[in-house]
Image (cartoon, rainbow, N blue to C red):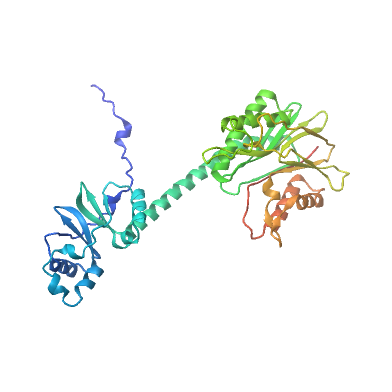
Length: 415
């Protein structure tokens, strides 16, 4: 018995996008040979008929509005004058006529362009220039609303799944952090379902490397940037190692600019709408187990270090230049800063979603000062408790204001 190959896709029903034909309601029509008396009889027989199409050899040429027609025919002597005349006397000679195959999206734009008349009176639907039915503006609006609701549902389903992917991408770093540092806390809260912040943590025999980054944008655009920047960081660590944060920032900067085509324009040139001016702010740092030194390099980011005997702590600022972006030179160099640590030294690093949040009675930014006050006030607590205290202070400050940005920060105490 010979076998027959069957295309599996041929057996599956294909989804057909809604079109104008789906809105075609079979309604009575009149021809140019019929009189206004005939129109009166049709309207009398169909009380709910708002408009009556006029055809010539099956081709739609006009539309008679019930209200306008009856108003005209009720004027003195109009019945005597027009009863036996062709129905084209009171018809709209330029109604909206659309092809049955026109998509709902195209039909919507066409109806809006045509104006209120098409929404109020409806539109004529034809196939091969032959009348098949009448479409109503209200019905079109309902279909558009249903389609938009379905599209939104599909988009949200996709974004929810994208969130699963983004969290899975970050899971290895979070698990490695938990296994390496006994007193540490990491907060990652996207403003939307997915976010533009990401973190990276990797342990080695002689120390560990960590990074916090805030990519351009929020939501889906920001999440795309995190995938690009995170993969470039992973490649850079494999190529040059984790012990020089400044060099890693340089490598990621070159990668972003090359990938997004930012390397062929002069600084300060205004990019067009089709060109990218994207990048990230970031804090990269390496902790050496032998020397207990923390090497830090920041791109528009800072590192807060609170030594056990220090009352206020020290803020170590990074460079005022972001990674990527049109204005950042391809060869820009980020300098490393070294901070010694002892047992109990507390380190806190955050993206700008924490300090830039608007709130308080004067509706101003949360700022670095309030962040430091919350940390210092709880300096004897664990990293997890300090992080919670910072979150509580931030939430109280935000109040009823909307969240402005993704929120990501990392706190640890040196063993």
